[in-house]
Image 1 (spheres, helix red, strand yellow):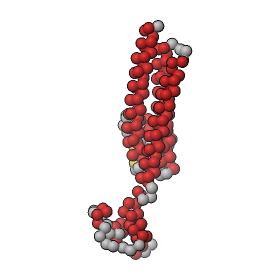
Image 2 (tube, one colour; image 1 turned 180 degrees about the vertical axis):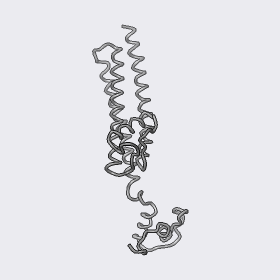
Image 3 (cartoon, one colour; image 1 turned 90 degrees about the horizontal axis):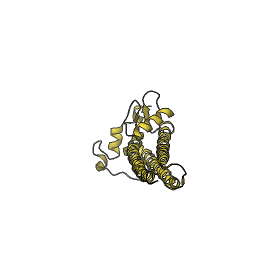
Image 4 (cartoon, helix red, strand yellow; image 1 turned 90 degrees about the vertical axis):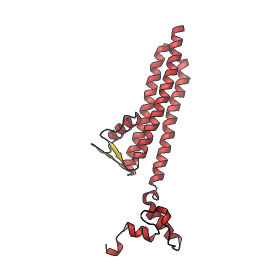
Length: 196
């Protein structure tokens, strides 16, 4: 490629009417036509105009909705099934604990599948650490993030980090929901056990 065709970001920003430090406020020069404006926006916003932000936001909203729906359905199913289960009342607490564990494991798997898809298929970031973005590393990252344990030897980079941060918040809320449900169930079934 010749010197004239080389990409020079500062010159491109200046030609588009941006200063490299002023952001959108530097739109001083007037250019004619829609193609010029589209090019200027693409130069300024780069990957955002390419849909990375939209893909990340859509994935985040979908994961929030799916994980909350899974949790809701498991707890709703428990509420319907526990009163009619013909097992000792204290054993019902074990059912609650195993169902909550199952719900959390399923939610961790949802996030792990999303990490794998975002990193390996959509190329929206990487996982740094031994083993890279293997499915096992995605499950490990998801489990340590969901439980708010923090990062260990697998660290995300790029836009996938936003999903990781969201999972920590979502995991905290869903674990709290399980804890409050378990407390209510324990109070109810232990009280029933004492009166029997």
